[in-house]
Image 1 (cartoon, helix red, strand yellow):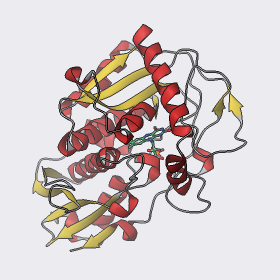
Image 2: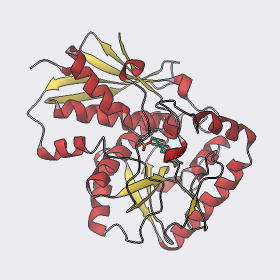
Image 3: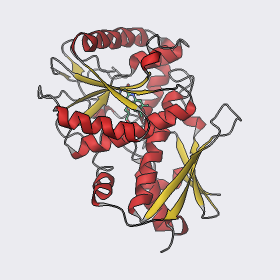
Length: 320
Ligand SMILES: Cc1cc2nc3c(=O)[nH]c(=O)nc-3n(C[C@H](O)[C@H](O)[C@H](O)COP(=O)(O)O)c2cc1C
């Protein structure tokens, strides 16, 4: 069987799957390079890094980790086992190389792997109001297991802790909204007209007409308003460390979890404002002994939403 790295169609399938991953502000901060048809490299595209909101490159690594997960899954369903190894992260040696993946012959993928792969193109960030129906414990357990499989943890945050976290999100949102540098950077990646990257207005969702869900306000003006669920259900993806390899791991865990959620019809969106603010202020998390929070995820049942655009494959793929 010919390796998918050896044919144009094979490579296209891999990169299309990888590029469907979520990324901070839909920056798609990745590039792929094929090395002697033996392995495929994942690079950070540093022109797409957000130096104001993401000074450590944490969100960039999480985004690239999500793309890495899709790439691994696409190789798996093509009949190969992805052997991936992370490489010195940006900053360590000024290289943009984050990971390399080598396909090794393997038994055919399982039905479950095929199902997960099919969910890649169905998954979306859903910023609409959700119904008041809670995600049942059995599904939550599957989401947590997906996260753990990739070496991270999933912490449900409900009750008073959930209310306190939502307050923190609301406060962080206010502080970010009054930061001129942050606003300028945000504007660069939102409402970008017919671009195939950034966050177009049609995926930004409505403004909440209450205080229950402090969604990120982006740069939208005059967006419609809507009533959000009274008690949003929150889960937080955490990692034991807080360096580039942990962020890549968090991204892979996030993406596996989001695909499992998609299969269960569960929607997800993100309330990461406190994490961005923490990074911008160069603070460490006071609670980090219980795990470093990497993504604050709101889950529930929302209406169908459109897909955010993606850059075309030739823009993100180069043959080394
Ligand atoms: C690291 C990371 C951080 C994100 N932070 C937020 C956020 O705070 N608020 C939000 O609405 N979406 C957030 N997103 C979702 C992205 O905006 C979304 O993935 C991107 O626009 C592509 O859309 P899609 O997920 O529907 O494919 C984040 C995604 C990633 C990977």
